[in-house]
Image (cartoon, rainbow, N blue to C red; front, side):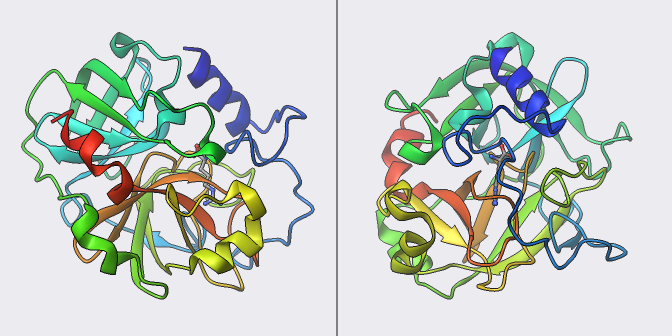
Length: 268
Ligand code: ARG
């Protein structure tokens, strides 16, 4: 479970001296502005609020066999979960659990499925190079309702300013601790040109989409990766990377699902 160990290290804050952007989940360069939500009572994801899997039945989390939550995912068919390639890279299917219907990680609500197959986009190398998409096949059909994912017919959903929903059990501040509960927030999609201004050539418009407020304060964060970015009732993005979390001028970067829809569809 090399990838999981990597994520554990990053969640524990023992960041390698590796480049901030190339190792997306390693929180480095924390000279970034402190998220405005730090210290707010009830501030969650970063800047979000509690949500229920009754409302968002397709949001799931990935856990180790010992139950440690390390990424998110989205149910797109009764036995298929879309997540990030950087969440599953190096993992063997038998080591991954998918938990559905559990808002509170400390509860036993919902269902834990095993994984029988991990597909990772064959061109994936690093989140900042795109192709950050993976599809898991589960050992059973879940009762939770799946969500449709965006295809080339859904380009309108990627219009700058579109209100989108982010969800996850990840950290509530950059380098902070993970949330016990499912959290959600609403963030606007940014334009490609604005995201390119933030991230330079690491931002690849065909492979990624960015979301967040110019002033920061609301974002996905470590442990949210692999989870959903939803707009217009469809999965349009997969939480992938960013500079810190919720920092002004640095939106979250998500895999552009519509670009990879044919490859995802081929796994269903
Ligand atoms: N790579 C992180 C993960 O594995 C997600 C980082 C998202 N960062 C952001 N600023 N939106 O959980």
